[in-house]
Amino acid sequence: MPTAIRQITPVFAGEVSGIDITKPITKDEVSAIEAGMDKYAVLVFRDQRFTDEEQMAFSQNFGAIENAHGGNITKPENKRLASGMNDVSNLGKDGKPLPLDSRQRMFNLGNMLWHSDSSFRAIPAKYSLLSARVVNPKGGDTEFADMRAAYDALDEATKREIDNLVCEHSLMYSRGSLGFGEFSEEEKQMFKPVRQRLVRTHPVTGRKSLYLSSHAGAILGMPMPYARILLRDLTEHATQPRFVYAHKWKPFDLVIWDNRQTMHRGRRYDETQARDVRRTTVAGDAPTVAQQAAE
Ligand SMILES: [Fe+2]
Image (tube, rainbow, N blue to C red; front, top):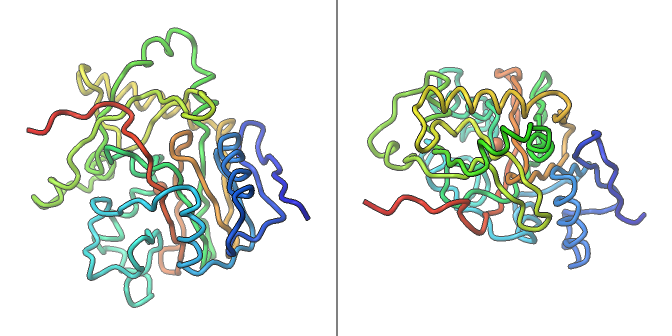
């Protein structure tokens, strides 16, 4: 059966059939997937029984794997997965669910806030690829919001107001909003805010999108309360059900999303049971705006 993409919601997201992506794929197939990503922004592939090595090899068709340093508080010696794999599970190195009061677990709860992966990096991520290895028995959907459709639906005055605004993003903002505010000096240094445009233009399609994330906590030149109200207001607008696709995981689903045109969040699940989902991240190729000169 030739590769086909079926659109899932009225605005975005597609389900791909007719391709085994655990094996090496051709240049034409890579191009077809990229074209699908540009159009649908989220692609779902069912029944792809990846090993970590195969997932990394498939991901590298779309660019270099992002260096994960500075994206988490988990110390290298406590990591369950090899370098290049982001652990989005609730599991410790022993393969068992982490205690509920584990600092690592609580930090990772930030994934349940709407965000775009690595928006806290000066060069933020291009694609994320999430592979479900063990699906939790209760909850744990991932929701995606189409930030192009959300931008298009803004009124003209709001578009003019926000078109050139620049935000500051940091893991300390997203975690701080959950009351997780204790960071070591080393972590504070690692999580220093970076600048991102509030409105991005897709390099291939030219479509504009809102570049929101719970990591965004300030807007340059705007007093904090005004900035936070604007960001909340835009986030509320952008995450209305008409812009959202909720993915219900089956074992061995692989979902790819374009972080430049979507936000996502995990939903709550039974924390006493395993949820083993593994992410590879394809690095972006440029900052969205000039960063502050080094001090
Ligand atoms: Fe994420």
